[in-house]
Length: 78
Image (cartoon, rainbow, N blue to C red; front, side):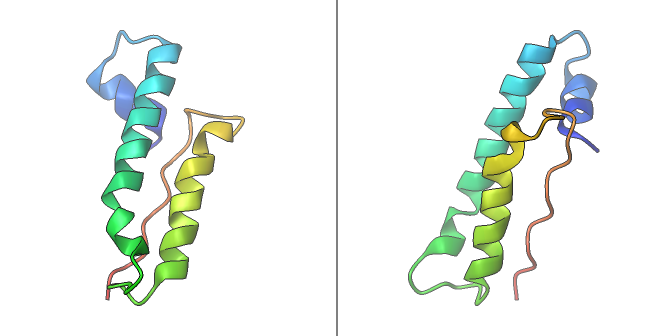
């Protein structure tokens, strides 16, 4: 499901600008939720995969189809 579809399902009358802004907020939340994966002692054992995931999240608004894009899947935690 794309960001656009997620937001429009919750707020059907929202403008495209609202959808894009809300998508950024949701994206920022996903980045914040994965901050713990970037610590020095790396509890996941997979810091590079998490760093890639976080970069994919940061790059989403630059996608020409933004906000009609899907969030990437996070890496698995071992």
